[in-house]
Amino acid sequence: MERTDYIERREDMVSLSAVTFRRYWIARLSDDDYWSVALENNLWLMQQRYHIQANHIVTQLLKLVKEIKAGDVLLLTHPNKTIYAYGYVVKCPFQTDRVSSLSDIISSNRYDYDSGIVCFKDTDVFYEDLRNGVNDWGQRISVDQWHYYSQDSRVLNYGCGYACIKGNARQSIFEVDAGFAKSKMEELEKQYNKKNMFISNIAKLLLSKRNIILQGAPGTGKTYNTAAIALKALGITDTDLTDHTAVMERYNSLLGDQIFFTTFHQSLDYEDFVEGLKPHVQTDENGNSVGVTYEPEDGIFKRACNAVQTDQSKDIVECIDDYLQKIKGYENKREIPTVSGKSSLFVWWKEGNSTISSRSTSSTCSRGEEYTPSPMNIEKVKLQALGKGCENNWQAYAQAFINAVKEEYGAIADKRVVLIIDEINRGNVSKIFGELITLLEADKRSQGAHPIKVMLPYTKAEFEVPSNLYIIGTMNTTDRSTGTLDYALRRRFAFVTLKADESIIEKYYNEAGNRELGDIAVALFKDIRKFIENPKHLCGDMSIDDLMIGHSFFMAEDKEELLAKVEYEIIPLINEYINDGILAVKNTQKESAFDSWLHLTPIGEAEQDDPDEDER
Image 1: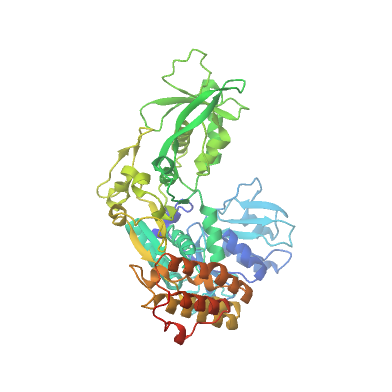
Image 2: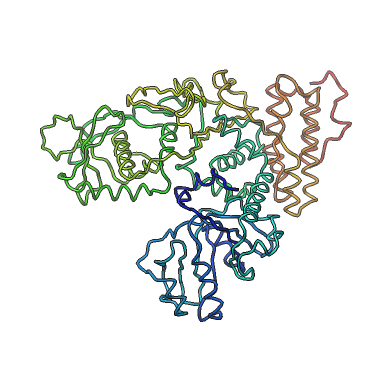
């Protein structure tokens, strides 16, 4: 299964195109203590050491490990009969002055070092980190990530016979036949996608349509599903998408880099979302205020678009530090283009300064060549480069500097970026997107069939929406405080409705081992659903899927928490439905229902309808 998408995705870490012959290995972890370390750090660890095990066993293993090259595949097992994930071998990611020869170690049956990171000059991928002397574990091989990891994997490490094994199957790592390995890799992917079928399908929809909106009533899992779909769309395969904690941790680690988040509201406009002029207080050499200037500042949409053009394999902060050394001193100044490309800047750095000196090449200032009217704070420039902030006073100049650094170090490469817009229906979309609403369509993107560029009003730079930007909006279907989305936006988005799901409540309590409370919660869920969808109650243009209280409201650790959710979250929400006329419920019905639910009991079939038709 030569998956070109895997190769393209990871070629920033592994030069797989240079691999002429890939080999496949079963890599075992026999000790529970190393399992979490291996998973968290994308490593395979080996424990055998001279002076601890028999010399001939260690020698055999090191000779085998020495053959592993970047681009090979490790199939991770633990215990021995199950394959949990696979990873592409990458070069040693550490820099160290401790360099040894693996061949010399093997021939002499002894190690050169007892502590510190050690790399080997005769293998690119094998290294060791001897933290506490020879008794500590250390030998390792890095992989790009553990693809399609599943804690409850059902992919078995047998079924091929000994013809598939090319070494000693009793060792902690041994080579297997390519056909066997590829079939197991395919099994892992199918199992992973089946387990996360909904997430996988919606992620595919996002990748093709470019823009989707998740809509549903409160508590139907829009926040969690948005995070999981974003990870899947970004090609993250080392996180169990059914593990809420793992998903949110991975999601948070990508914020400001590959994931951007914003919330629409009625005061948001184009200047906040795309770009606008923002006031900046100017000071003289003594720090005294000399007035206010207005400088263009990027909004989150523009920052997300710019983030597509960043290569993760390049540490932009390190690139900036190195670039500063190149422009150290006025005599080493560089001329760089502005963001619009219509003019240029001189940039240089005086050693010891916390700012980068810059001046327009067309400046007519008479205060000397080295005078800089627009110094840029270095730390803020770095934050802007990382997508975590901006240079307050000279953002456009800072972006020009960042672009020059990226160009210098080849740090420009397309990557996928997801922009999440929460409560998308609460903003004035026409006002917020402006002319860019047209550019959201897939064929109008930068690599689409009919790409369109616009000129931005403040920087006067040409702008296009990259094809690798994906937008996920969320919408609360019960929110009546704002109007519905206009057709211009609707035809550019695919809509996915998240429904309240009884099975998720059952699964939650089954996994918690609390079936008794689970039965109460499920009974309440069913009873409230019947109450809302009762034809005599449900009115207007909203369906049960728009209004049904989400499953998360029924998930609690104990009876007290469930009761609190009913009293302070569920009942107030249903009461709002009634007050707003979304549900036509008589007072006696309402009081009876609320009283029953406050005792965590269903209303009962006989009480769903009030015999008194006149009382309101």
